[in-house]
Length: 155
Image 1 (cartoon, rainbow, N blue to C red):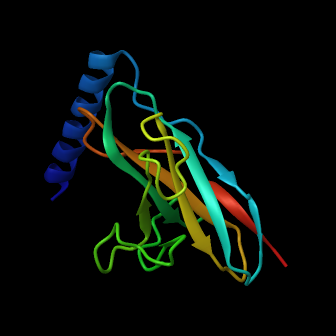
Image 2 (cartoon, rainbow, N blue to C red):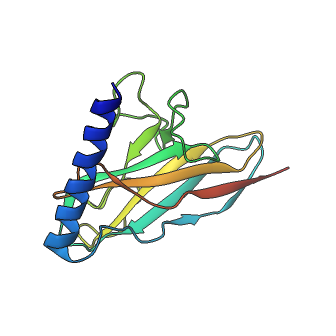
C-alpha cells in the first residue's frame, strides 16, 4: 500500500514536471471574481462567478465552480443550483459543482472570450460560503484549483 502511494506521488510529480518543462511555467488560474460578495441570510440570491483563462494549454469546457469548506475540501453532500433552480451538469450524488460557461449562456456575457461564468442560487442562513474553480489543462493529471474564495452572509 505504502509503495503504491509513493509510486503514485512520484508519477504525479513526473507529470507536473513534464508540464512545466513543456510550457516553462506551471498551470495557474486567475483569481475568480464574485458578485455580489455578500448576501442576506435566508434570502434567495443569484451570485455570479467569473474567471478568465487564456492559457493555450487549457482544455476547453472543463471549468467547474465547486462548493468547498473553509479548508478547501469539496462539500460533496451540498447541492448547488443555478439560476434556473437546477443542476444538469452533475450526475446524481455529485451535485456539489456547476460547469462554468464561455458560450454566452448561464450568465456568460460573451461567447469564446476566455471568461468563464456561472450564476449560482444561494439561500444560506450563515456563512461565509466557500468556493473554488477547478480547470483542466493539457498534460496535467488533475484539475488546477483556484484559491478558495467566499461569499459573506449578513444577518
